[in-house]
Image (tube, rainbow, N blue to C red):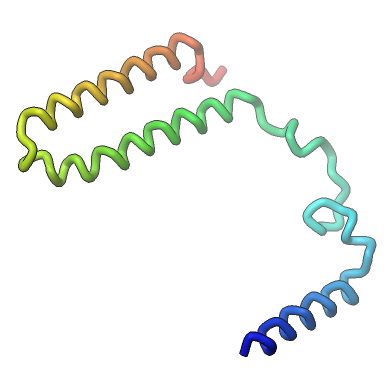
Length: 105
């Protein structure tokens, strides 16, 4: 079965090489269109900061879901710990706001 799978992949790859030809191999994404600008210069650096902020708060939600399940068992200490965690995130939001990371114009 492994030999059949490997030979099928090899046949598909060889047919692709034969049909597509070498001309498409040197173009980006094999689209056939010449690039108009450098791939890394398309997006403003502010979008990367916005992405990092989104990921930070997305991970924060990953911590809050299991906490919400066990908060009744852990009691007041769990609530205090979550408020400390949310306080640290609030400090991060205030810092990002003051740095202009949330300004779009």
